Amino acid sequence: MLKELVIELVTKSIRTFLTGTSTRFRLKKPHFVNFPEIIKGGLYIHVPVCEQLCAYCPYNRIPYNKDLAKGYMKAIIREIKYYSQQLPKIEVTSIYFGGGTPTVLSKGIEKIIDALRSNFQIAGPLCVETNPGDLTREKVNMLKSLEVQAISLGIQSFYQKWLDLIGRQYTLEKVETVLACVDCQVKLTHVFR
Ligand SMILES: C[S@@+](CC[C@H](N)C(=O)[O-])C[C@H]1O[C@@H](n2cnc3c(N)ncnc32)[C@H](O)[C@@H]1O
Ligand code: SF4
Image 1 (tube, helix red, strand yellow):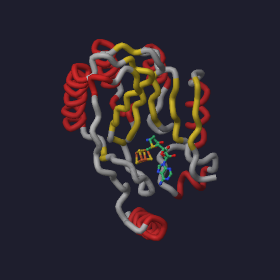
Image 2 (cartoon, protein in one colour):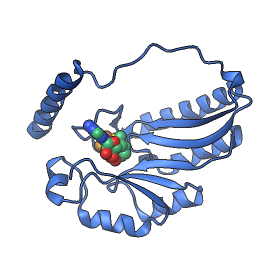
Image 3 (cartoon, protein in one colour):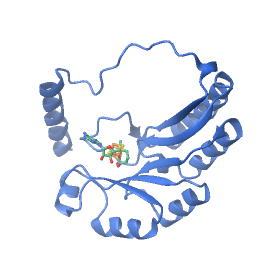
């Protein structure tokens, strides 16, 4: 707990030094988008839940809670239907599930992908973000059966001491197991070398 507070404090100090603000993102004013005229585009689905929160992570995420996640999934499916009506001409060139850790939803991902397929013309690859702590052979098989072509796997470091220091809840052994059962395209994200 103390370690997480210290990391949060150091992170905020560095962020303030580098960007002039301690907030995570600078938001620009929204500009007008003519949805009905869009004929091509990628879709991004944010899944802001994780089993454990990493202190260094600036993204929009909260600890997984079954009821909240259920409500969030319903809301996503409502949005999919709404935007498919707003974007009648769109050909979807890619779909990216970012997080958070989208695979925490397990079968929920399947429901969202089904809704996307029923409501949009999809002409490109699907990609899902995850990390070795959450990925299992069953989940890899589920993603394959859903024709997910790419997984963004946040390994962070190939040194156990760094994984421990930043509070990641998996071992290098688990990383190896996960890599052995993933045979689709793998993008390795490791922040700490
Ligand atoms: C938002 S996470 C989502 C994927 C997954 N939850 C995970 O833990 O890897 C995507 C990636 O963002 C990167 N990331 C997180 N915090 C970061 C930071 N403060 N600076 C740069 N990259 C960061 C990590 O490499 C992480 O794998
Ligand atoms: S598991 Fe991923 S998204 Fe969640 S807090 Fe850690 S780095 Fe951020």
